[in-house]
Image 1 (tube, helix red, strand yellow):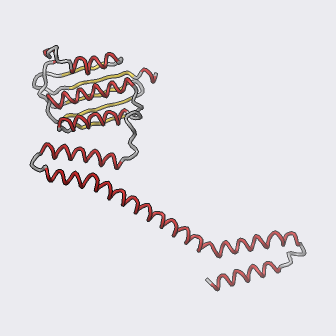
Image 2 (cartoon, rainbow, N blue to C red; image 1 turned 45 degrees about the vertical axis):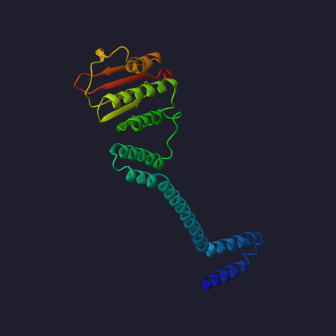
Length: 247
């Protein structure tokens, strides 16, 4: 390195002593440019090494911060949940509920860009199904295609779907599935259980869950709902809401 710097200084000195054919203006321009260029070439490896070192140190600090955040989250959630599961090992339903809740928590932590319920109807529906799972100790397989801010009409769909899922958890059997699809013209949600089914026409008029909380709610908000079931068969609730505001 010393030899290279010495040779560079000698070369610049020799270049500076050149008379440039008696052109002082050209010499005044080229000599400083050559000196700066030579200094840049000599110092370039050092600067590059310094930049790489700073970048590596920054990455190490970021990794340490992320590692500390993950460790704190694992301690506050996963480890405590595992302790509860060990204490409640004789209660299978409680263990299953804790495991599902922890799974949702981990998914939320891994995908921290998840939007709020007001900004995302997909989040609103998923949250509603999670509440049904916790309330009844069942597993609901939820799939949502498309997303949009949760308007009053879409919120009515979420509430109707939640009531349908509640009915499936109380009166049906697992597996329970919820499939939702949002397009530019319509929002549809299908709630299905695995039986044992019932005759919708024979439902007691005093039981207002289906009539008011699902079908009536959708009709009041400009949508519709259809309950398809039969004794010994599965039950499916189809909820549809046209997106008039998007037209």
